[in-house]
Length: 298
Ligand SMILES: NC(=O)c1ccc[n+]([C@@H]2O[C@H](COP(=O)([O-])OP(=O)(O)OC[C@H]3O[C@@H](n4cnc5c(N)ncnc54)[C@H](O)[C@@H]3O)[C@@H](O)[C@H]2O)c1
Image (tube, rainbow, N blue to C red):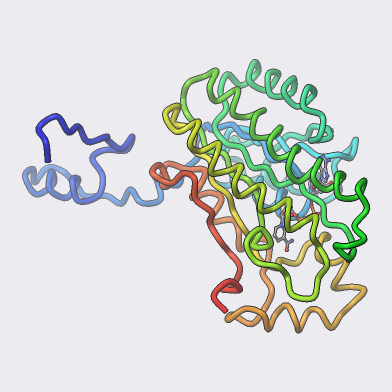
């Protein structure tokens, strides 16, 4: 290794084997675990689109539990859902100083989103985390008959809306200069095609999100803004319930399509988003993390 090589240092240094080597040289040092400190989101500020329900709300709560100062949920309804209100109260009762906030906005409105980002930045004086989870899935529609407007509607939310959400947070991350972590919610449907489902718009949009993540990661790496995509498999939420309730046989079919033999729960994404948002993943960018019960392995 050349003598000009300078190793970067963990914000929690000394850590890992270096901590062990320091402790070996100094009997006064009492070894203590730092592994969970690496996952702590103490004082961080973030936005979560689609945070009124489903995966977005579950992820927003996980960020609060990990110690974030404030997580802003951005979603369409003027007033948040009952589940969201109960989750906000739960966060308050946890007593770790974390706040869950709600802002009504359509993610296809770039100007409005940027304005909201600026207001949050002015108020909190930082921006660290972005989860772009707002997305839509239309009903079965044959690809050769797919109507232009319906295709455009899906692209507007699932592609344009994801870019605008990432920009909203990324612009504030660049403004404050502390770096940050942007997590774009893609889907395994961006890589595989869900068997027997005519979802050409959804699948196309999720592939676009995968490449958007890699592309943004390459532009923003030197600003220490990391961009990764998270690709869940079948998870039970209102989005998938619209299928499972009308076609109950799909539960068995989807369950049998992965080696674990069941569909996922939204809480099974808590760990991965906290990891991606935190200092435990500082060398991870431009990656797609598949969490799908192994669906892709068959
Ligand atoms: N549930 C699954 O199995 C699954 C699997 C892979 C990926 N995903 C992705 O995860 C994300 C969350 O999905 P979910 O299952 O929680 O669905 P969901 O329908 O429960 O939640 C999606 C949220 O996005 C919001 N939203 C939609 N359009 C919006 C807009 N224009 N502006 C602002 N908010 C808008 C909705 O109001 C809703 O609250 C989506 O991107 C979805 O494609 C879900």
